[in-house]
Image (tube, rainbow over all chains, first blue to last red):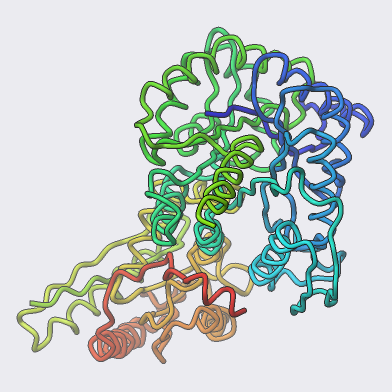
Length: 367
Length: 206
């Protein structure tokens, strides 16, 4: 099982001191967090993509390429890459390039983006969100899998004799996750292609996640990619820890109360009861996280959000220490013990390459 | 044996509330009409008081999901055979709680739903707010709104120069229309707000 962190990349004033970091400081902090994630033994770092303030990560592959150069083991991913408003040709090129630079330590998570004006800024219409996703992703797949592509669709200029370069590393496209909060069409799309499905799992009650993952698993089996329990599932999660849970609650409360997404709404206690947010001791985070498999089944990737809502870098780094030292080692052991045989790990470049080579070998033998 | 479930949504703020009084009168009249000549019918009246859900409504607007008590109220509306919606008139329209409830209700929930609308206000001069603000709201949600909307001013509840007989008559007329609509539509309860599965072949077709 893979564990990692994902960042939204928001520049939010620290509500306890009223100061926001500069864009420079925030971007450098994201790099520091990624390096720290590798240092404490986590597997994945993912960045969001945004095209409006107060967010800084508009150019994910620039950031991930820079991090790739400073890490050796960390898997680099996104949360999410906008499949609706980015040109699928540019996604194919950028992430293949990143694959080569990072030696295959790359996958990506596609999402639609829910910021209305981003669509017109990039020449699109939010009402076409699903249709753009379906068409752009079908093209993206072909660009990575076919050397020469002739293509015509509804949303982009046609392509004639186009080759996306560089070609994917070893001829193996990056693994793709599809992220969604509640669009059933996205679970269906992920299932159709046998791709991974990532449930946001931070803002909403677990019932939504349960329903979406259940649908994805059922349709994954329907499309013949394996048993429902073999589908590739990732979950978000949101934690804040201190040795004593009372300290965690007291320290986190002002950040929660003023957070851009849910601040000034429900109480921290209500939100913890109604969503997967866990604020408390490392043991409480372990117990809560282990309970996720009870409603989504055994899954492959757990990502945590630790650096939002104006939390200082120092605090976020302390969270990574706790994750690396006390939480993730226990979770790895417990999840592995509970996982039934036949439930796969998340695909990596190596496993996809090995599977592809085995497939080629079979073909050679049968000739 | 038929069970008709009527959900009464009332947005009155004070306790006791004249909006709630009007809502109860409409519910009672509706029950009587539904039972008339149908001895094998049971009528269940559920009351959703928005005052108790006020914080949950604002939280839902901010977080995008309902807390458990609000979720239950929204589900009850979705399962109803008919909805009686009553609001006090504030500043020429429904009050904010009333609007918030129908803002967070899934947009498909009231499609084809029999709805009886009613309002209360300090003076009868605000009565047309029902026609200019509240009826269009339910038109947008594609509900079946009964022709008679019931407005009750303070003076309609009694006193010199009031028209309590007129109010009673309007309540009976509205309840009659509402009951007729419920019986003739006989809609299957329990709308699935999740919608149906969309096979990928259909998504690919664009």
